[in-house]
Length: 227
Ligand SMILES: Nc1ncnc2c1ncn2[C@@H]1O[C@H](COP(=O)(O)OP(=O)(O)OP(=O)(O)O)[C@@H](O)[C@H]1O
Ligand SMILES: [Mg+2]
Image 1 (tube, rainbow, N blue to C red):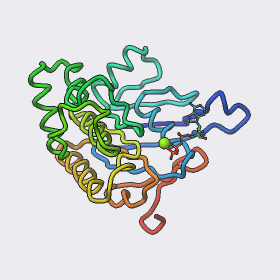
Image 2 (image 1 turned 180 degrees about the horizontal axis):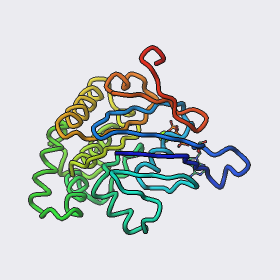
Image 3 (image 1 turned 135 degrees about the vertical axis):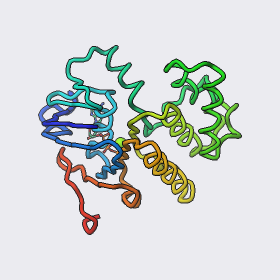
């Protein structure tokens, strides 16, 4: 489902430093639930942005869902992303002028679903995340943690084959975090969705089939007793 090979990625601001991602390889099968842990600044968001096609590697090859991505145009990349990837951003990235419902429905509309069907599906996923009563609000009318669940609802709404999540429980209390992770696990099992979560919260690893540690720009597979 996902194959990365010999990937390098650095930032211009860090010239002279080793790249954040260095000779990284990763192979993930369809339906795997993976967790990538690593210290703050280790490159988790950088890696997830590459997997989510929000940024391009400086070097290396990337094949996702059978599609080699090196030679796609920006437009082809954006269509591929829309059809294949649900991305839960660390900083949510909700559109401030749209209601919660419209934020979630937008990706469905973009994928060709009609307006009322999009709204119905968006309301359903918000309800399953226990925030169905917030659908008419604007993002600024939410509590500190509620936008995280809206961002999760938006990523799940389209039922994408791949879900990428950047610290999806970072601003949730323990009980809500458990509910969200349980839902991700359920979606993973029901639809064979491939899920990759990056986090520094090692308790999430108990939900994952495999856990990797990002260190010195590369991924190390962790065994149970190393966590
Ligand atoms: N746009 C950028 N320009 C320059 N340097 C950047 C940029 N984005 C990230 N970095 C640097 O790259 C390194 C990895 O950052 P990244 O955001 O991937 O870490 P992270 O593991 O997600 O950290 P956190 O757990 O704090 O979210 C850091 O040293 C960071 O300062
Ligand atoms: Mg990060």
